[in-house]
Length: 444
Image 1 (cartoon, one colour):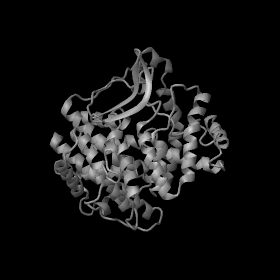
Image 2: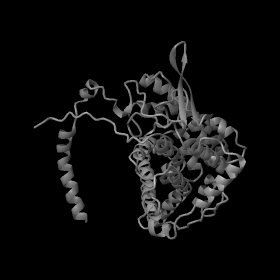
Image 3: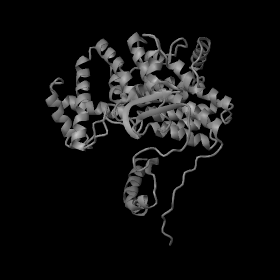
Image 4: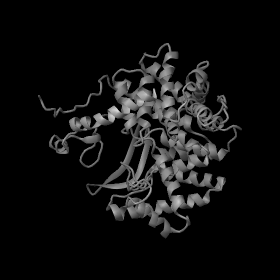
């Protein structure tokens, strides 16, 4: 096998130049034919490809007939996300309630919420021996790959896997929402044991606990967690469960659903999209950058020292030399990311409980300095602000969540949004999404 891999490696390296020569397209042709690359217009706005009632992002407002930037807003089914979170009690966990809202389109009554929580709890189980026979058979450092394999395998245990009726698809979506925490944590535990030689433990989920509580309980050998930890993780899950419908993985969900494919294949495709570093892996990149900054900045309170090193990063002289301050800026938001604004309060709470105030001070100084430096050096004046990924990795680190699970935790939340969009696509259209590509092939 090693000899074959070496042969293939040598062969493909030789043929890469052939591919590049024959697949390259003159960049001027994209402008000539008015191609919206990345489904974005010349101003960077997403090309309108559909309608949705599930969520909405607001980043601008009209004043005096002109569109100007405003503080970002994120709406779930007609409610601002911060209002939904602020309506929860101090220690009340709301992931399941807001999941019902996104799926069904309305907030549940007390009885409906209790029923939905019971259903989620009862569905939070895997087929007999699935953990042993599927998850543990081929452990991988890439937990997203492990989860995707498990999702596709779960279709083999579903007698109605191919039924794409709304009721059956809703049933499958609810089951996957319930099972995702298990697929993520068990996938990591298998990798941690077989590849990192650590102790193996598999805790069964507790149907009486919330999604956030089960995640913390199953990840820890002693099963223990504090109310603050559960509240912060619950808030993170709520903020990540949906984002406007136009992101890559949600669009993937719509595209695959429109082809008539089953729920398992659709969610596996969405997972493959989310795992891309340009989409779901942003908080890992923030953490790698922060590790680098800690190694090169001695005084976390010295703004001049921090600014000097951030300038080196922007000038492509430090860290990965790409000139980016990760966690700063967003494709849609400019003045502020509403998710970050809501999250910041809970970050401070957790940092105080964990004794991580010094690290928090470093984050806050970077949050203050980076937008100024980016504006000066990149001449970006529309506004640059921290996004939710700037702090989410820090929170996961304080919770003791391993980095291999960061994107998987994102998926545990976003499966709710994917599910809502799958149901809406099934109800609202029977047309396959089929974009146009113009051929510029030379005839021979």
